[in-house]
Length: 259
Image (cartoon, rainbow, N blue to C red; front, side, top):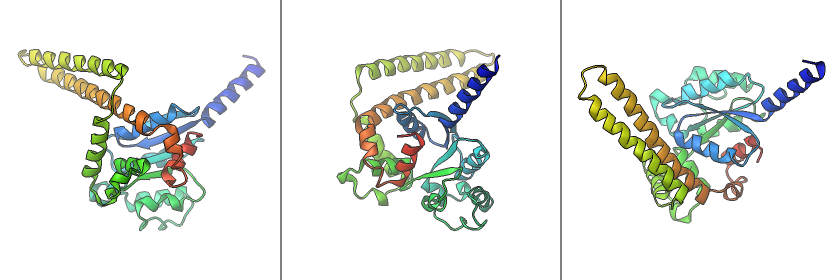
């Protein structure tokens, strides 16, 4: 490889790093929303899905990635603050304050949705807290539907139900329907195989667990089709960008994707 080729390779690698972001998140819907934004962007998304994690584990994961030479974002729900076993520990808050070059006790009594305000220099990891309560509450704020003015007083479960009703009422196109039908066929196929496996004496439990995990995967894919259609219809990019001056969290996300 010539010196010119080496230099070109280095420049491309540097450009690739600059045009990338890392996002640590917990829920599947958060991941789908990130994909929705990425479709409009030249920024490469590096998703880090912490399925079933706590706010503490998610923030720790963000701190671990903070040494990277790209922006690192941490996305989690406000309601972790009310769950003793899922809260951010004081030790982790001290570590976060250290990353942001603040006094070690600066964040210990700060409400979660105000933590990012303390990060005035936008140092890694950059926090995005979904509220009220959850990512669904964040979506409802973004939609700004006058019929849901009282959502701020609702529980996480109620907010999820409100978004579920909206996604259930979105009309799917033919491509969506065909995709869901193909997933349904796979689910039926796996369920039939589970029935057959249960009649077998050899290693059926291990095989059944594998098949059940495949069924769950395809059920998530079906939910993703409906949710992505909901985002496409109800939250296209112009609707999202129109709220950037009102909602700090969406402004951070839009800038993350260069939008």
